[in-house]
Length: 394
Image (cartoon, rainbow, N blue to C red):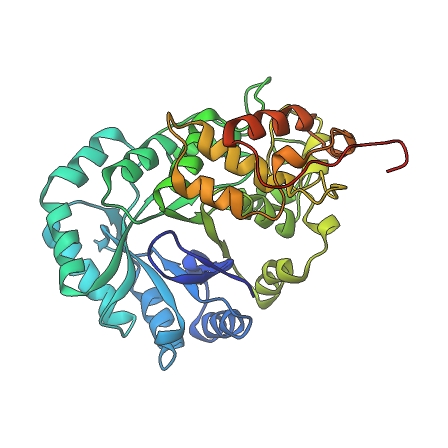
């Protein structure tokens, strides 16, 4: 298992995580088996947004004696009222539900205290300006939560969270299908039977969000990486092609600022299928070819999706990373020093490009890579490397 820093929180989280929602439909023995397998394979982060008491109790019992091995995302505002889930900003209801979470998980703290499910503008304002936020801050001050996070499906609200300076990480819904859609405060739009014809490429609002998160050190954990399983079925997929769990996970992990993909597991085999990513071949990870040949919609044409298909470069430039750093930096009026530092820490830089265009023949999305290398070299300035000259004998 590989581990990534979760933004500026200082936490090293597993690339593959556990979204615990599906555990609601299993008995304790099944829940424990799934959690044990996840822990055995190196998974160390789980999200428990659910308010239903029984599943909280099962999770707490399953991790008892191993609490220190887990980073827990626990949600503030997910409550159980009258036998059903209710999202609320009522502080007394939030307190009651959060104390219940601590008790049932058999812990006295939550690593990532999540502002629960903010998709609408008026809700964001209510959360940030009212008594609810004071309660969240009090939880952090008392040590009952270690870091403040927020969950949302709406990139516009996610951007507001990043810019607030309060939110340290986000739980955000990411997959190739959702990334094509413009911001919405209605999650049902993401699960429509069909997307509009002509929809193509990653929506600009989402690209901006990923770049802002990277620049501000706000880590992302991912929910809905499989779009509820519809991406596994070519008949239900909006692209008209089926993707694998490994391809979906790789797509998420190539987005800027993403630290962990929290998939849902019904069986031990589901856990194994996700963790298989860690030993997968490049061919198995390759979502780009599949999406570029999809019969419905155009995905990413003309823009770099950081898929790495362009490798190998004859002068060993990590083209995907160079493109990522250029994209992260160029949206700013002034180049962030951190991005410039990361760029120049690379072993090879854009000004070393020899213009052979071999990478472009492999790019499934028709990116003009040599032109981008020129633009990047002009943007960052030249490195100390001497560019090679391309010849027919190379």
